[in-house]
Image (cartoon, rainbow, N blue to C red):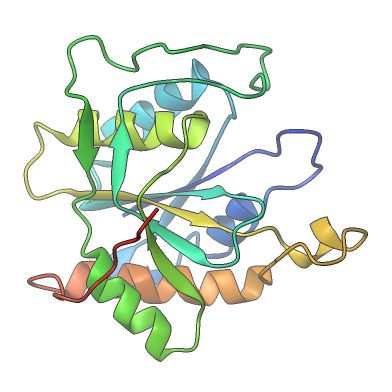
Length: 211
Protein backbone atom coordinates (compact mmCIF):
# COMPACT_ATOMS: atom_id res chain seq x y z
CA UNK A 1 0.00 0.00 0.00
CA UNK A 2 1.08 3.55 -0.69
CA UNK A 3 1.49 6.04 2.15
CA UNK A 4 2.48 9.62 1.35
CA UNK A 5 3.61 12.65 3.33
CA UNK A 6 4.69 16.14 2.36
CA UNK A 7 7.87 18.17 2.30
CA UNK A 8 8.11 21.18 4.66
CA UNK A 9 6.26 24.36 3.63
CA UNK A 10 5.24 27.77 4.92
CA UNK A 11 8.64 28.52 6.40
CA UNK A 12 8.84 25.29 8.42
CA UNK A 13 12.02 23.18 8.37
CA UNK A 14 10.21 19.89 8.91
CA UNK A 15 6.87 18.33 8.13
CA UNK A 16 5.60 15.74 10.61
CA UNK A 17 3.49 14.09 7.91
CA UNK A 18 6.64 12.89 6.15
CA UNK A 19 8.45 12.12 9.41
CA UNK A 20 5.61 9.83 10.46
CA UNK A 21 5.04 8.26 7.06
CA UNK A 22 8.67 7.39 6.43
CA UNK A 23 8.85 5.63 9.82
CA UNK A 24 6.40 3.07 8.39
CA UNK A 25 8.23 2.57 5.09
CA UNK A 26 9.08 -1.08 4.58
CA UNK A 27 6.82 -2.28 7.40
CA UNK A 28 4.10 -4.86 6.92
CA UNK A 29 0.59 -4.15 8.16
CA UNK A 30 -2.13 -6.79 7.84
CA UNK A 31 0.05 -8.62 5.34
CA UNK A 32 0.62 -5.57 3.10
CA UNK A 33 3.96 -3.85 2.53
CA UNK A 34 3.99 -0.11 3.22
CA UNK A 35 5.77 2.03 0.63
CA UNK A 36 6.24 5.67 1.68
CA UNK A 37 6.72 8.54 -0.73
CA UNK A 38 7.29 12.23 -0.07
CA UNK A 39 5.22 14.65 -2.16
CA UNK A 40 6.30 18.20 -2.96
CA UNK A 41 4.12 21.02 -1.62
CA UNK A 42 3.34 22.29 -5.11
CA UNK A 43 0.10 22.27 -7.02
CA UNK A 44 1.83 21.07 -10.17
CA UNK A 45 4.29 18.52 -8.86
CA UNK A 46 2.31 16.86 -6.08
CA UNK A 47 -0.17 15.05 -8.31
CA UNK A 48 2.50 14.16 -10.86
CA UNK A 49 4.46 12.43 -8.09
CA UNK A 50 1.36 10.76 -6.67
CA UNK A 51 0.15 9.42 -10.01
CA UNK A 52 3.63 8.13 -10.83
CA UNK A 53 3.75 6.25 -7.52
CA UNK A 54 0.30 4.74 -8.09
CA UNK A 55 1.23 3.64 -11.62
CA UNK A 56 4.49 2.13 -10.38
CA UNK A 57 3.19 0.34 -7.30
CA UNK A 58 -0.40 -0.57 -8.22
CA UNK A 59 -1.30 -0.41 -4.52
CA UNK A 60 -4.30 -2.01 -2.85
CA UNK A 61 -4.80 1.11 -0.73
CA UNK A 62 -3.54 4.70 -0.78
CA UNK A 63 -3.50 6.97 2.25
CA UNK A 64 -2.12 10.49 1.96
CA UNK A 65 -1.09 12.40 5.09
CA UNK A 66 -0.62 16.13 5.56
CA UNK A 67 0.05 18.68 8.28
CA UNK A 68 -2.81 20.81 9.57
CA UNK A 69 -1.18 23.22 11.97
CA UNK A 70 -3.57 24.37 14.69
CA UNK A 71 -5.71 21.26 14.73
CA UNK A 72 -5.76 19.36 18.01
CA UNK A 73 -6.61 15.92 16.68
CA UNK A 74 -5.83 13.48 13.93
CA UNK A 75 -8.38 14.40 11.25
CA UNK A 76 -9.85 11.68 9.07
CA UNK A 77 -10.98 13.62 6.01
CA UNK A 78 -14.40 12.82 4.60
CA UNK A 79 -14.57 14.92 1.42
CA UNK A 80 -12.30 16.52 -1.17
CA UNK A 81 -13.62 19.44 -3.24
CA UNK A 82 -12.77 20.41 -6.79
CA UNK A 83 -11.17 23.80 -6.15
CA UNK A 84 -7.76 25.29 -5.46
CA UNK A 85 -7.89 28.56 -3.51
CA UNK A 86 -4.49 29.12 -1.93
CA UNK A 87 -4.15 31.47 1.04
CA UNK A 88 -0.34 31.31 0.65
CA UNK A 89 1.83 30.38 -2.34
CA UNK A 90 3.06 26.82 -2.64
CA UNK A 91 6.77 25.99 -2.57
CA UNK A 92 7.04 26.89 -6.25
CA UNK A 93 5.47 30.31 -5.70
CA UNK A 94 2.16 29.31 -7.32
CA UNK A 95 -1.05 30.64 -5.76
CA UNK A 96 -4.16 29.56 -7.66
CA UNK A 97 -7.44 31.26 -6.82
CA UNK A 98 -10.82 29.61 -7.44
CA UNK A 99 -9.29 27.17 -9.93
CA UNK A 100 -10.76 23.72 -10.62
CA UNK A 101 -8.47 20.78 -9.93
CA UNK A 102 -10.03 18.69 -12.70
CA UNK A 103 -12.07 20.38 -15.43
CA UNK A 104 -13.87 17.10 -16.12
CA UNK A 105 -14.33 16.15 -12.47
CA UNK A 106 -17.32 16.31 -10.12
CA UNK A 107 -17.67 18.99 -7.45
CA UNK A 108 -16.43 16.59 -4.77
CA UNK A 109 -15.32 13.09 -3.93
CA UNK A 110 -15.83 11.19 -0.70
CA UNK A 111 -13.10 9.05 0.83
CA UNK A 112 -13.43 5.34 0.25
CA UNK A 113 -11.70 4.46 3.52
CA UNK A 114 -13.80 3.27 6.50
CA UNK A 115 -13.18 6.45 8.46
CA UNK A 116 -15.81 5.78 11.14
CA UNK A 117 -14.31 2.37 11.94
CA UNK A 118 -10.88 4.00 11.96
CA UNK A 119 -12.21 6.67 14.32
CA UNK A 120 -13.52 4.07 16.76
CA UNK A 121 -10.20 2.22 16.81
CA UNK A 122 -8.17 5.40 17.30
CA UNK A 123 -10.35 6.65 20.14
CA UNK A 124 -10.28 3.23 21.81
CA UNK A 125 -6.48 3.45 21.68
CA UNK A 126 -6.56 6.84 23.38
CA UNK A 127 -5.49 8.75 20.28
CA UNK A 128 -7.23 12.11 19.76
CA UNK A 129 -9.09 11.79 16.47
CA UNK A 130 -12.06 13.19 14.59
CA UNK A 131 -13.88 13.01 11.28
CA UNK A 132 -13.18 16.24 9.41
CA UNK A 133 -15.59 17.75 6.89
CA UNK A 134 -12.97 19.90 5.11
CA UNK A 135 -9.46 19.27 3.89
CA UNK A 136 -9.02 22.95 3.08
CA UNK A 137 -8.34 24.36 -0.38
CA UNK A 138 -4.54 24.15 -0.41
CA UNK A 139 -2.20 21.39 -1.63
CA UNK A 140 -3.59 18.79 0.79
CA UNK A 141 -7.09 19.03 -0.68
CA UNK A 142 -5.54 19.20 -4.15
CA UNK A 143 -3.81 15.87 -3.54
CA UNK A 144 -6.87 14.30 -1.87
CA UNK A 145 -9.12 15.26 -4.78
CA UNK A 146 -6.51 14.24 -7.34
CA UNK A 147 -6.10 10.89 -5.61
CA UNK A 148 -9.80 10.10 -5.69
CA UNK A 149 -10.04 11.30 -9.30
CA UNK A 150 -7.20 8.96 -10.23
CA UNK A 151 -8.78 6.02 -8.39
CA UNK A 152 -12.24 6.48 -9.90
CA UNK A 153 -11.47 3.83 -12.52
CA UNK A 154 -9.79 1.46 -10.06
CA UNK A 155 -12.66 -0.12 -8.09
CA UNK A 156 -11.55 -1.88 -4.96
CA UNK A 157 -8.58 0.39 -4.31
CA UNK A 158 -9.29 2.39 -1.16
CA UNK A 159 -8.13 5.96 -0.93
CA UNK A 160 -8.26 8.82 1.54
CA UNK A 161 -6.50 11.58 3.41
CA UNK A 162 -5.49 12.16 7.02
CA UNK A 163 -4.45 15.50 8.52
CA UNK A 164 -2.20 15.57 11.57
CA UNK A 165 -1.31 18.34 14.07
CA UNK A 166 2.05 20.06 14.42
CA UNK A 167 4.89 18.12 16.03
CA UNK A 168 5.95 19.43 19.49
CA UNK A 169 9.25 20.77 18.11
CA UNK A 170 7.33 23.04 15.74
CA UNK A 171 5.47 24.79 18.56
CA UNK A 172 8.13 24.89 21.25
CA UNK A 173 8.11 28.70 21.14
CA UNK A 174 4.35 29.01 20.63
CA UNK A 175 2.62 28.25 23.94
CA UNK A 176 -0.93 27.00 23.62
CA UNK A 177 -0.62 25.76 20.04
CA UNK A 178 -1.67 22.09 19.94
CA UNK A 179 0.71 19.36 18.84
CA UNK A 180 1.03 15.59 18.74
CA UNK A 181 4.30 13.63 19.01
CA UNK A 182 5.40 12.06 15.75
CA UNK A 183 5.72 8.69 17.49
CA UNK A 184 2.05 8.91 18.46
CA UNK A 185 1.13 9.74 14.88
CA UNK A 186 3.07 6.70 13.67
CA UNK A 187 1.05 4.51 16.05
CA UNK A 188 -2.16 6.13 14.83
CA UNK A 189 -1.37 5.62 11.16
CA UNK A 190 -0.39 2.01 11.73
CA UNK A 191 -3.69 1.37 13.48
CA UNK A 192 -5.74 3.29 10.91
CA UNK A 193 -4.15 1.37 8.05
CA UNK A 194 -4.82 -1.96 9.73
CA UNK A 195 -8.48 -1.07 10.21
CA UNK A 196 -8.77 0.18 6.63
CA UNK A 197 -7.40 -3.10 5.31
CA UNK A 198 -9.39 -5.40 7.57
CA UNK A 199 -12.77 -3.67 7.90
CA UNK A 200 -15.76 -4.78 5.91
CA UNK A 201 -18.58 -2.29 6.33
CA UNK A 202 -17.81 1.02 7.98
CA UNK A 203 -19.01 1.70 11.53
CA UNK A 204 -22.28 3.60 11.85
CA UNK A 205 -21.57 6.25 14.47
CA UNK A 206 -21.95 9.99 14.52
CA UNK A 207 -19.04 11.98 13.15
CA UNK A 208 -20.75 15.14 12.00
CA UNK A 209 -20.39 18.76 13.03
CA UNK A 210 -22.65 21.76 13.53
CA UNK A 211 -20.24 24.13 11.77
